[in-house]
Length: 608
Picture 1 (tube, rainbow, N blue to C red):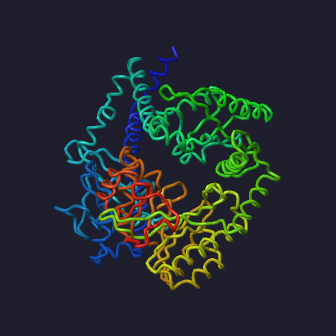
Picture 2 (cartoon, rainbow, N blue to C red):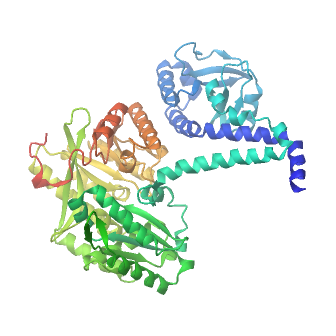
Picture 3 (cartoon, one colour):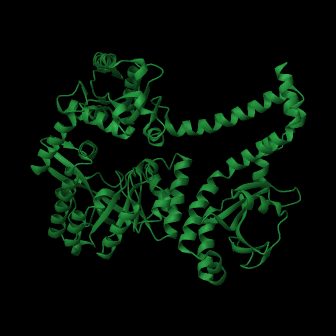
């Protein structure tokens, strides 16, 4: 009875639901170009304050802006142009067409003026399906806003083929199907299929099928979505795992990791999460509702002992492994998941430093202080060094410069930045460390006149007057000392841009590091006067097997070429990635494909 009532109600309101269904599908289709065009239009408006007058009277500006808009074109788009209205009439302002183009000032006569009336009234992007006689399949009309007032319209006509590809969904005769129960079933099927398809695409990006776990890309994209306060955080690291890879090869090493993950997962509940944080390091999020603090400690100890007693096999070889675990319990006191992970990481470092094969918990009262003091001792004992990784031309392989990578050498142990910086962030030690890094590299530059190097500075370093003063004192090295800016979540872009302009005047070249890693935003990029953009390695290493990563890098490359910014690609590890990057016009790259980071003494002193 309920289905019959629903069927009658649905039939009586069929026109409303049909229109909404079609508009939702079309809106999903144009989402990417709608978002991307917003950034490009904002850039154009920023550089061309008197938008209509400048484009009407200055051909150079008009050509430049049409070229920027042409970056949006793809095979599904038939035409893309910008209109402005005057006295209730529409005129061409910009047109990306190569032939039969509308010249600036030419009158434009729409098929249906209601399109523009609706957009003007609601000030939102709308899509309209064209009549059958028209060549385009459907049209997107986007208002161009300045100070909340419409100054023009961007119009995108999609091809008939694009509309036909959606026809299986758009042309459903809903009145016919609404008369039967099959209508409801089919509609539900299409909706569910669409949702499953979208989630499956995301799932493939986030999920590692070899290990049956989520990967770090999932974590990066969901930092703000995970309610971390509901979980205990633990980091698990396989002790001395590099020996397995070195002895048996990475393929067999991956099989061992898979077996390790299955073993750890067997101890977890369905409400817990296991994320492959790096190759042999795993992030555990243990739901607090499933375990008290004492039960958590018992669980982690069972996991440690369970791994210790497990036989692992590669072929006929049997061997044992152990794990070190760092855990953070009081996540409800933290401001972010990232901070909680840093604390678990600090505890993990202590577990490994104290002999491995143990569980260590971050002590809010002493743990961070003790580790920070240890870092301070090592810095003051001149154990800080820099290793250097070359940045080379992708076209000819020539060395452009090196990147200085922070290390602390403690006996035979080399401590990496991710084990150092979290412990000292927001403390005076951070600026002390920065000054040491600058001094270390200035010494190398003064001794070696051919040496060129980039150093990493945080956004906080750039608003530190003492750091800027040191760079000013060494401005005679600015042609060989590059600055890479590490963004963070609380970056003050206005202050940072002021510092960048000071450094530009001193001759320094500026690079944004790890662009695309999480905090970076193309709108922010437009506000900074930079010379280089370094695309994050998590995107680069996927471009040969991930369409999303491929498209992102291609878009960045086109944008940077248009704005005179050189691109550096990180984490290059094979020739296929090099060739793809070269096809995009990416100029420089670094990664294991060229060389691992080395101590200064191990570098080729010819620097060529």
